[in-house]
Length: 387
Image (cartoon, rainbow, N blue to C red; front, side, top):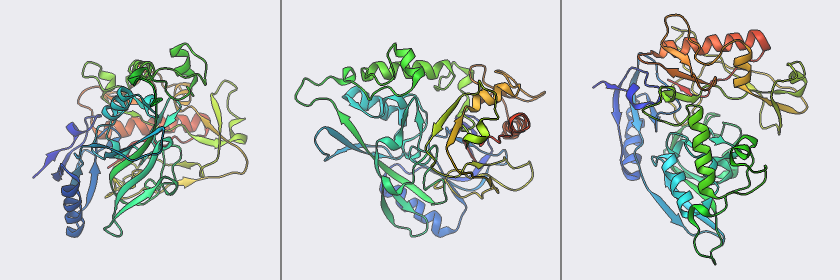
């Protein structure tokens, strides 16, 4: 049977799947996935659908929609809390729960759509925090061996929007274990009034009226982050047409410091520790038969060729939003006749204004890549998974 996939994604585009399964518990998830693998059917995993662009033709295979739920507290060293979270647990519900309990470590990641199982895949991050800062391990069903493995944080190869899964290890995330900081156990539980991690992001510090490095109540941090994200259309909201998107569509490019010197002096830039060679990936042309799989365990699709460049010395992270704007693409921009557009609130998001096709999304994203490349010599890398 054909099942529409567009409604299962936040971008609301994409054709049908030949088959979709929705395991509710971990034993059922294991059994179902192993059965699909044994069948030889093409497959991919769909979580919250917030970071994916599915083609108009859909997917001629099995989509595994992970719906497992549950948060279990496990034994942890004093002053910390360890939570083993099922992959299908909605991410923002998890963050809200930890804030309510007075546990710090995830509060700046409020409002990010999607499921917990996706958090280690691209090491989600925002406002100075990354999921990898708190991840202890991942329970993972490995495609190559068919066995469940517990992968420790040090073996996840976490970096800026990347992990061992984005580098080719295929399978299914079953659960993620986090280590969070507990407020003083000897005092009355403070809940959302407990202090969060030191504020690490200038924009968030400004919104809170504090200095970078200050600590603020968890509830206040969550509220400020949700407000900031909403102002950019980055919180799912049925009343906000700018939230019909896949979030940030491009990652902030990492280039050599040498290259960055050639950019305009007002181009935002941040020195970063080198984690990997800078990678640029171009979207496939229509009809090429190629798909870009940036997901690792969300596999079942083929990878497009990527060109990579490296250089010795310090590396610099640039602002993709700034590059897009300075290339002449402003908020609300759309191509003639297209129903895909740049968000009216934030140039880093591509939105479906109503009835857009995946081809509309891809055409606009290629146009952005080409304009930025022609203007600055930087090829932006898409953040969503293309199926």
